[in-house]
Image (tube, rainbow, N blue to C red; front, side, top):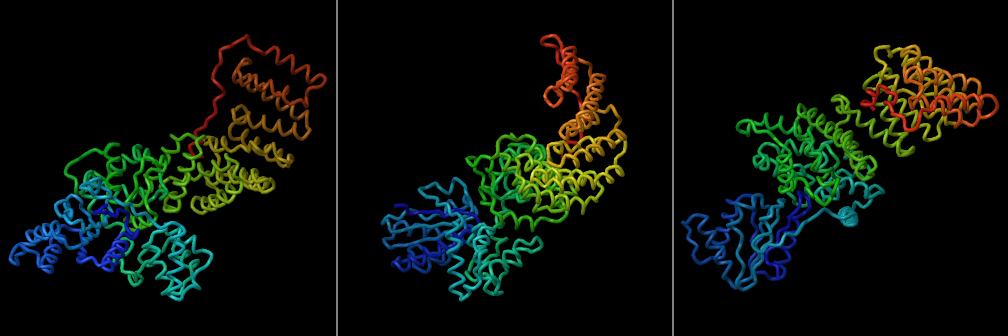
Length: 601
């Protein structure tokens, strides 16, 4: 039989409530002595032991002795008494200091110990103690709790279709559900209205979980319960890093992010700056990846995050309410630095990820979504909004039209609001929206959007800033149904490029080739051939007749098949045969195009 059990779990999961229920059950079962001890400080433990020794008239109790001496006498009595007893040690915050004060095994086998703690230290499982991990409610348990709580308060009318969504939003945390139910009862607010108030960015936990809503005796507000151990963790090794690390983690997806994020340059740079600014650290001490790893384990031990290597790319997790409380208690002047670090860390993670790994890519994208939701416009102010474009382009790349269109509509509206209608990055966002429209078979919307932007491009583009026009090529237009609109748009694009970039610029030549293909698809064979002749001449002039890119231009009429008759076909075959190099020619560098603007995509 296990005589000592330790209930371990995060703040608000109901450990104290479980211990209280166990104590009531013990009294009902006839246990002769039940002692409840607030174990958050060792002095409180010895004082309560001394009081218990006095009340049960323990042999060896001396009224004039210190509390420590009488506490030891009480522990000795527990070991030898034949009476049944239960000692509950609630909220152990320092397992090391608690070591001398664990009740001993009962010689009669009639003694039990139950402890609660937010800590996850290995020392808690020593000495024959069994650790029981207490998690949040399951979805079914949360639904049952809400229904019973509201029904017994004669407020069943407050239940609606959003009850399950509300429980999920609160992370199935018993403490949060308790406060939410009390709030709804007091204010006569249904689940849907409370959910709207909770998700509103300006609402604070103090308002949503007020003190008068604590009807079930939890005794502390949510934020205090979740972050009570943070000040203690801040003074532990590595000193001064617990608070900065938790602030950073609170900006990311509560469902998890990979450990590798904490070994990146951005995070190490941020932790070094926080260490240098900390008054609790004597002298400079550089932070390296091993210390970043140590601070994760520190927060894990104090129950503020979960650091689980077996969870893979979601190894580092924290409860959504822990994250929200941490964000609310982050000073306004510290927030931009935290957001900038999170954006830089996710940038490193994105660039280092394997794009073909869907799970890995999905984790990065959910963390980008979380950062956007937490930071809002601040993400644009610190220059991290390129992450939003990357995420949106991945939706287009995966062919997710139903998600890509509303995403780019929202991003375009935000860019216009913050940067202006004629800003180059706004024009890039609008171009991506047009491509999402094309993916969704909304060709007319795409054409209208792109044609609408031409006047703005001509206003802002200058010859010494050619990179914006280089990436602004509507390459998929020639494959759509409205070929006449595509031709008109490509003609306008070619005219702008020739004027701003020059007739022999590589991107101008590429646009001319796209227009030739559009002409061919529209049945305008002569125009297509004439343009392609010019493309071939331009590439031969720039690269030489034997360069692979020049040969690919000469090859194209053969692939078209629409030009494979009569003198045109014979002419192209002769030209292609004359330009074919000897076997295994040395391959020169491919045509180089300035892709510097792709850093903005």
